[in-house]
Image (cartoon, rainbow, N blue to C red; front, side, top):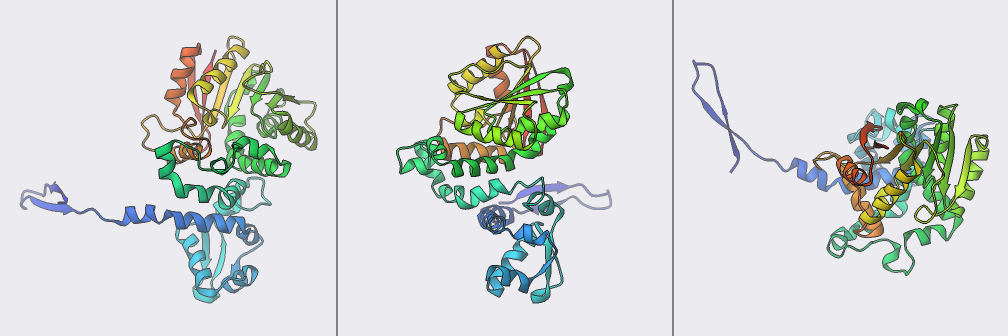
Length: 359
């Protein structure tokens, strides 16, 4: 039975009951989203948006470039048009396809804002693991390489330098714009030094050093990672502003600083480990210091940030149910227990926020 809605008309009309019937459109659009996602990931991995950044291409030109048959090529391209990820002028075989403003800005590898690394990783690796999402929810076990091998995610990652660098490039794609906005929006003028915990290739430190001339930064990570970070810092001529410090953030002391940052770090760990890292940040800071956590924070009511919930399930697929994303309210409750007194949040991108705890 549909939901009944009463509409009150002017006095010259009688009351009229109308029925608002449910439709299946929303269900089918969400359910078929796996195909839309797969086409976008495949197009990114194939470098389509980079080619189109050089100028629009006809259907025939795209077919020739990728050895595609006409009908499936047209269907895939027009699917991207339908979700506003490509523009098209004309129809049929003579149609010309071009990037939208968004794909031109974020999916052209030659542009500084390129985020395609994370999409390429999902295309080549992550996508297939989601076939067993319900099994993961039942067992609480990871569904990645560790399901069939004895080594865990990070051990597998660190085993090959090329794999580690590819992973960091992918993570940079998901973090770049949030980190750049943090460098702009947070009042770093009130502080002199920053330590970034789990700094990977020192992306956040490099962005901060370029944006804030007065800051000195320390990027803290494992030795194999820091070797890559040091190379990136030298390439950017920032070695006089950034120190790459090797260590295990669970075992070793954090380098002291006015501000401690963790970008997409806490969600990798269980609640006890989260508490441990928050406590270590607290103990590192002097009174008045700031601890900044950058994550795809789930909204407090758990109703709006689809990407944050997706990322939490991604942690399930990678590490089992011990790892999870969280809301700003949850982080605040943990940090208050440890001793932090004041909190605020900054919106960085539509899907990423920073929550700041002040000592």
